[in-house]
Amino acid sequence: YWRFRMKLLVLLSLAFLLQPAVVAAQNDRLDRHRERLSRLTAEDFAEDISIRDDDLEIIATIDTSEGYRVRGGFFSTERTDNFLRSTINKQTGETHYLLYQTITYTSLPQRWRWYERANYQSPNGLSTARLESVTREVVSCVSRDLCVFREDFVLRLTEEAVRWIANHEPGEFWRFRFVANDGEDWDDILAPAEAAGLLIAVDNYRSARALE
Image 1 (cartoon, rainbow, N blue to C red):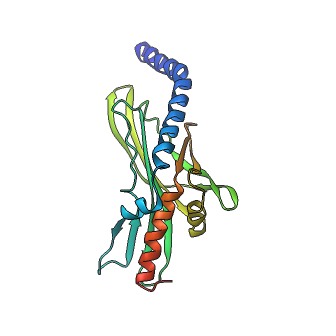
Image 2 (cartoon, helix red, strand yellow):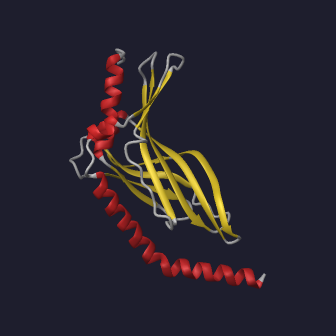
Image 3 (cartoon, rainbow, N blue to C red):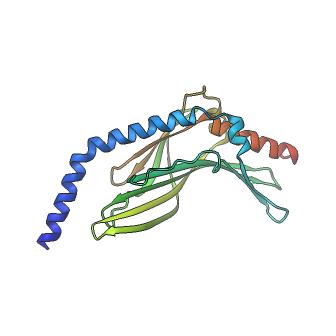
């Protein structure tokens, strides 16, 4: 019992001492993220669009998952990736938009972050919305005191919001924050070129099938 308490105390102390370094690392990650994204154009994303559709499907799915991927380093304690997805009803033309997000992180056993809400920029100013969980899993436990967790979730967006994001100036990223129950919030960005590339593919798909 006392041995466990000592281990826990050491881990909590290290987490407290390393917090400034974690914040600095996240800021550095965002800077490098912005630099790589700023070099991509709407046409780049449109060329790498993924489309899942055939004659036995009512819903066609179009997304930017292959357009840009974030890969953490081998020793990264946090890894994240996101992309935009659109679903189109081929009978009605009804179209929905979603931001898919994956966050992988290390923490004490049973200590999930539980991302449940997003704060984000929108055409109407700062907005907030509940997230929809896709999957939550324990990837592995490297010891009795440390595990790797992964949370996948989506944020639903209106077409107006996606077009508003696409109309941002190059280099002016769409910003959003995923709010966690344990206080470990996650800030991220999306390039306007990614939204514009998705819209090119969606508009072309709907136009080719005379869908409104």
